[in-house]
Image (tube, one colour):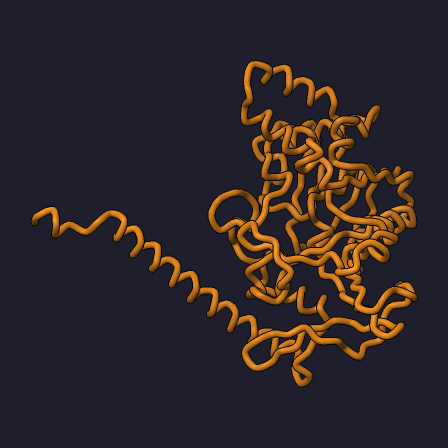
Length: 350
């Protein structure tokens, strides 16, 4: 066969890439159709549901839920949707272990079970990390809560992954956003529901509040379990005052293939949906269950204050060059990266 008869490598790659793209589009269409059928079954006669109910189905539905699928959501590989502090593992796990050890002192970490709620893997943040705790236990998203004894209860971006309700100010009152099935598509609609009394009055027309009631409820359920020790939650959020005064468009967003979007209905079951946590609500539920002096600080401050010696040891060991460990450390604590993007709420009981 002459060279002119040989297929070009670029042509072969383009053909293969096109086939993969067509297959991916076909899978997306099938997934969307399957979700519409599930939505119709849940919405029944009205064809409508509250946004948090839609989100529960989209994220945690047993067949098509985003967090039920066995796929790589976190990281930099093709097909992942976002990165977070756990992407910098094992350094993140090391810093968490060092910080929790400092906060527990003079109590010994070996006397505590480290319980990670919302872990993505069976070993959680301590995969490939030597930890000082008596044992570790991971609770995946959606699994039942059962916490007792001496524990360090830890989570990373657990609370922002909970369903939330959406409200919009209209003519001096509040209307609740819902989702409606219209033929073969989904649309955001305003419902005639009774709204919660927590919503403030006097906000300008069109002001949106994404209210994370489920996140606050989850914090209350965790705190109500019969355990003593340390609560540590890494997440991003705002005060209730900020949510009601400084966020006129709300804080809800979608993440798909590392792209942030405001189209919350675009890919149900295939994209992440999130909003800012209301830290005031979490603090209130912790204190009501006997947790003392909850503290909210930036992730940068949390690690520098409580894991400073471990940070210094990494810096000294990697002083000769810019290693992967040093890059991970900077990613976690630098204010331009994750250091200020995330906050840490911690409190103790017993």
